[in-house]
Structure formats: C-alpha cells, structure tokens
Image (cartoon, rainbow, N blue to C red; front, side):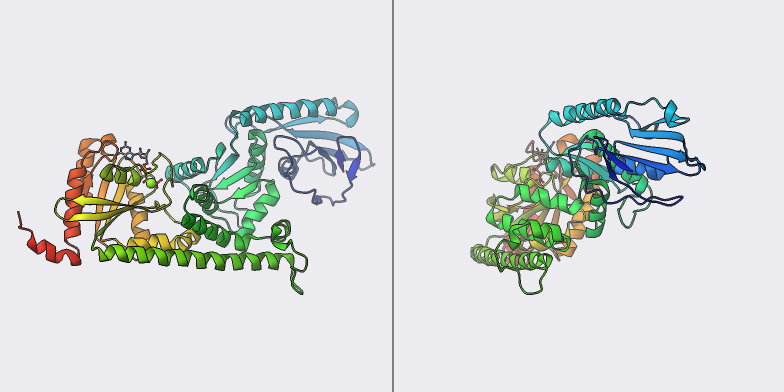
Amino acid sequence: MLISRDGIIRKVILGDATHLELPDIGRLRGGTGRFRGLRLIHTHLRGEPATQDDLNDLALLRLDLVATIQAEEDGNAGRIELAHILPGMDGDPKQSEPFRRIEARDIYTLHFDFEEEIRALESEFSRLTDRRAGETQKERALILSITPGATALSEIAELVRAAGVEIAEVLPFSGGRIHPRTVVGLGRLQRVALAAMRRGADIAIFDIDLKPAQARAFEDMTGLKAIDRTQLILDIFAQRARSRDGKLQVELAQLKYSLPRLTEEDAGLSRLVGGIGGRGPGETVLEIGRRRARSRIRHLENEIEKLSRQRSVRRRRRVRQGLPVLSIIGYTNAGKSTLLNALTQSKIDTADQMFVTLDTTSRRLRFPKQGDVIITDTVGFIRDLPPDLVAAFKATLEELSEADVLLHVVDASDPSMERKMDAVGRILTDLELESIPRLVVLNKADVVEKPFLENLCHRLDGIAVSALKREGLDRLMEAAGARLGSGPENLVSMAWETPK
Ligand SMILES: Nc1nc2c(ncn2[C@@H]2O[C@H](COP(=O)(O)OP(=O)(O)OP(=O)(O)O)[C@@H](O)[C@H]2O)c(=O)[nH]1
Ligand SMILES: [Mg+2]
C-alpha cells in the first residue's frame, strides 16, 4: 500500500511472492530536499529483510519510508522492518549505507512515531539544502563523471563553471560499463537520487553525450534534468553570443540538437501549436513541433548564409587590398585574445574561463618588412567539438581558410597541453585547414620552468611568449613574418629581401 501523510491509502498494489510493480506515481519534479509524502508498506513472505529493490524505490521515488511486514502463514503480521533515507552522509558514500533501518519482532513491539520522525527528517533535509542553496543564487548540479581520468574531470568542471552553474557534488562513475538505457545502472541511480536530495540539486550533468532516449529514461527514473556535454557547451555558447551572427548560429545548433529530442509534451507546451487550425489533418502535436522546428532551421540557415555572403564580400575587398591574414587559433582558454590584445593594443574580453570569445575580431598589425597584415582572433576549440556546433559555426570556421598563417596558441603551463594540441590538429584536419602554414606559440611562458620551456620550443618548433606579460612578442613577430613571407603570393616580395 502507498499511504499519504494524512493516513489515507492512496494505492493498493497486488504483487506476487517475489515482486511488486509500483504504479507510476508521477515525475519527481517536486521541491528538492523534500520527501514525496508517500510511504510504502508491503509484505514479504519469506522473512527476508528490506531488499535492494525496496531501497531503490525509497531513494529514487523519495518515499517517506518503506516498511516490510512478514506475512505469517496463519495470516498474522510478523517481523517488521522500516527503512528511511538519512540526511548528512557527506563523507565517503561507501562508509555506511545512507539509510536507517528499524526492526521489531512484530508491529506491537515497534516503537516508531512516524509523524514526528518524518517532520524531523524533513526539516533536517531542508536545513541542509537551504543552507547550501542559500550560498549562491546559481543553479546547482550533480556532475556524473563517466570518462576516466583527471583531465576529463577538470574539463567538465571548467565547462560547468563557464555555464555559471554551481557544482553540488561530483559523482565518480568512470569504472564499469555504460548502461544502455539509463547510462548508469540502478545502484548508481540510487546514489544520484540520494545525492540530489542531500545537496539540493535538480540537474545532472554528464561529461559524455547521451542518446535522446537515455536522457529521457534517466530523467524519468531520477526526476532530475539530464544535461549532456554537447548541451552544456551549447548553453555556454548561448550565454556568450553577442553578435547577430553568433546568436543565429547558436540558435541553429540548439535547434538541431533538440529536434530529435522533442517530445510530445514539449511540443504541446510550447507556443508552436498556439493558433487554431494550426494543426494539419492527421498530424500529431509532435509532428507539428518538429515541422515548425525544421522550418525555423531552414530560415536560420538562410540568414546565416546571407550574412556569410556579406562577410565574404568584405573579405574580398580586403584581399584586393592585398593584405595577408594571420589567424590566431587554439584550444579554448589558451590565451588567444590576450595575445591579440598584446600585439595590437586592443581590449577584447579575456578571462580565465572557457569560450569567452565567440565572435571573430580582426585588427591590423604592422610588420617591419611585410607591412600591414590582418590578424584575427576567433572562437576557441575543444576536444570532440559537438558536430551540431561545427555545422552551425561553419561560416565562422570557414573564414579560417582565408588565413595565410595560423598562429596556434598553446597554453604551455597546461599539463594536458599535448592532448589539446592533438585535438586542435584533428579539428584543423576536419575543417581541411591542415595545409595552411602553422606556427606554434607556446604561451604563458611566465608560469613555466625555463628548461622545460626550452625543451618544448625545440621539440615543437614553437616560439615561447607571455601574452600577459608581453614577453617574446618581437621574436613571435619575426617568426610569423618569416612564415608569411613563405606564402605563394609573397614569393615575389621575398625575392626582394636580401638574405642575412
Ligand atoms: N600567466 C599567464 N596567463 C595568461 C597569459 N595569456 C593569457 N593568460 C590568461 O589566460 C586566461 C585566458 O586568456 P584568454 O585570452 O581569454 O584566452 P582565449 O584563448 O582567448 O580563450 P577563449 O576565448 O575563452 O577560448 C586569462 O585569464 C588570461 O589572463 C600568459 O601569458 N601568462
Ligand atoms: Mg578569447
């Protein structure tokens, strides 16, 4: 039986000797840190203690309590066991179980004041979560760390920070296989639900990408909103987009991402079906939602195409002026914008945060020998750049193909520097830009040990600079100038230079 706080029996469920199928009692979207207001009381036939299923129901459904009563052969009630969720447990989750169990020989010897206990528990939980949530106004998320390794963990933490979301708790789930339906198996789902309750979190952020059905199943089981890596990155981009171009591109990427994820419910709730007669013959609400989304996608693609044509006209004008182009590229947060600022005395936004720059900025830079050059700073790269994003930012990224030289800025102080360089290399190959001459700029030299840096410069054939301290810029200009000089259009001007 499912019994509500007022003592009314809400459901009577008939199971068999081993199994009980609970009815759908709605999604758990209610307030965080609070119990559901329902207790489950059921019989066991073989005197077994509360099972893992019982504890899963307790955690995932946030039940007030689960009670198992042994049904004796003569029909009398025998041994009784109660279990409820415990607050606290901030330490090692494996230390002991996050449940309290109370046993009695029979219901007559059970001393448990349900009303008082549940009131105390609720106030303890809301005290814990209120205190935590009260610290900031930000949304609070659990991070489900599925990809092994410290690098992946720090990356997802950085992305979450860039999205302006507070990390409530990191759940390390990297061992074990990925559950095909819900990504994490039942035992882990239980831990997720309990952690969400204790920490007052209502979002779960995955460091991997989820299939639409996986995200939905996870949400149904835990009542938490599931956000995968791509969605998180799209979210950051959406927050950052300033230019019309950027906003259109992000909206396009988001729509493409959501199209296969649209559900009947979403479509019904949106204004997509507002107008009377908007519904075509035989169409479901969902189909209409999809159709509208597709037509919006087409519209956005056209707009972006138009803008990109205008840009290419501007670019042609520039090329006609005969100015070579130097494009700064590299992993996000490597210091690209800081370098552009240092080289051109500009004031583009920089910050110790991922994806600060979204829009391309171009400046003129005068080289002693080569004269004026256009130098551009653009959106940063990240490993496994979401395909929807690449598609949407195609126009922005295509501009890179006009570059005569790519300045590949690397954060030399980053322990995962080489992995990030590889990721950048892969993206350049995907964008068919690998044939453009490249110069490796080992940035943040001010915070790297000298011998290590010298070794790096040698091995990667790079130039060490500190964009922040404006050190090494002359040598960088010289090396970049030399690469520019080696481009085919500049062969003529090179011939005029007297070799040293
Ligand atoms: N110590 C040190 N920090 C630097 C240097 N160059 C940049 N930074 C810092 O690195 C962080 C990122 O710099 P940005 O210039 O915003 O990096 P970005 O590559 O443009 O990053 P996104 O636009 O977010 O992709 C900032 O906090 C900078 O102050 C440097 O030479 N030394
Ligand atoms: Mg930048």
